[in-house]
Image 1 (tube, one colour):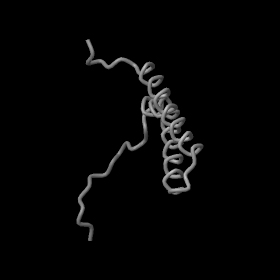
Image 2 (cartoon, rainbow, N blue to C red; image 1 turned 45 degrees about the horizontal axis):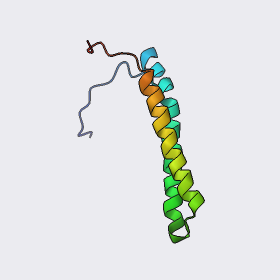
Image 3 (spheres, rainbow, N blue to C red; image 1 turned 135 degrees about the horizontal axis):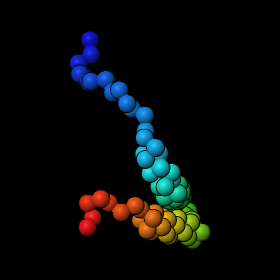
Image 4 (cartoon, rainbow, N blue to C red; image 1 turned 120 degrees about the horizontal axis):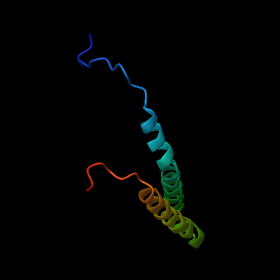
Length: 82
C-alpha cells in the first residue's frame, strides 16, 4: 500500500529551454565540483596540508568566481526586469 499519493507526471522530460539552461551553467557546475574536490583534499590532508594544497583551493575559488561572472553576464534578461 502506497501512503504517498502523487499524481502521475505526464511531461517529465526537460524542455529545450531547460536543456539550454543546463548547458549554459555546466562550466560553473564543473568549477564548483573542482572546488569541492580541492577542499576535500585539503581537509583530508589535515596538519599535513601543504601550501600547494591551499593554493589549489584558492585557484578553484577564483575559477568559480570567474565563471560565475561569465554566466551572469550571459544570462538572458528576465521578462520581469524593466
